[in-house]
Image 1 (tube, helix red, strand yellow):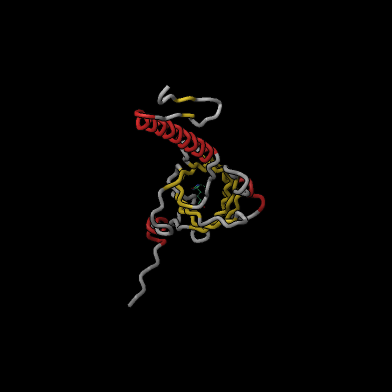
Image 2 (cartoon, protein in one colour):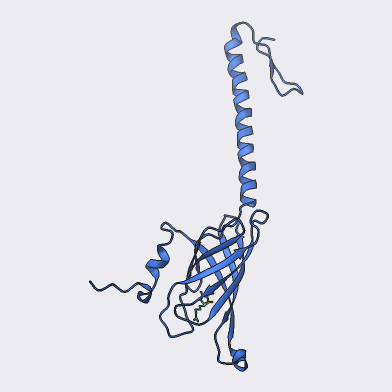
Length: 202
Ligand code: BTN
């Protein structure tokens, strides 16, 4: 039959186009091939999207905010998993003016784990003699939203070992990522006035 399209176990259409219907027959062939290419492309794209979202790795670096309104900015995590940054607490157990404070920590090997555990210490050097340690894990939700679930211990300085019973507080904080259009600037801008260097006399 003229323009007859034969399909067999071989995926390529076996077409014999002869005579008047050659144009029509070729168009049909082309349409069939385009359909197959489009299907393959969509299928590949779906596979890639699925695999990347389930393997999405959590990156600790960036700006984070917890439910108290405290901000922390973590610099780039190095190859050994170590990081540093700044913490601006929204609350304090002291009556002193809050300053942004340095933090230092380490994260579990990111190359193997997509939701790594980590720990860091904040030294409230400028306004309190306490130290806080945080431990936690970074979780990536279905839509890629990152959350840091942490627990902390805050050790306050006391005069003698006998006062140790009242020296440690414990709690939990959940951090979510904030947009960080100006790395290094936000914490500085949000810091209370006591953190701003006093203008020098001219
Ligand atoms: C102090 O008051 O001695 C220093 C500041 C402590 C702030 C604590 S650390 C745990 C908790 N989470 C925060 O974001 N702030 C408080």
